[in-house]
Image (cartoon, rainbow, N blue to C red):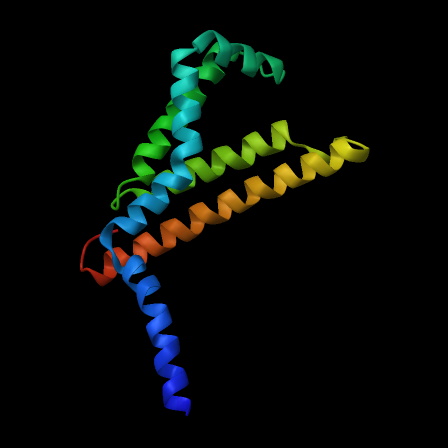
Length: 151
């Protein structure tokens, strides 16, 4: 009876294993994780005045320079993250950016009541994104070494 249960479990897991083994899955997963940064960078690039206003609205000095740095970080970090060879670097850039942006824009400890709960949830969502970058970089690095490539 144990054999039949194990066989059914294996059969149920086979489609998931096939999806995970498909070479495009890892890249599509990285694309999904990078998508908010790609879109944000493109929007800021096409509406540069809005990007400058956003930086100024956060009270950051030199908002033009900040807007340029954010665009380069979001688009360049995403491009690196989508490669196998430089995934680790792109992940680090985007994770670092996310930490800084989250501390600046979602400092939940400065809010009260329902706003504090919303900001805390957003803060934790961004923390999860940082974890996603770390996991993606680690898995890409491991996969690269298994295939005999360089990381």
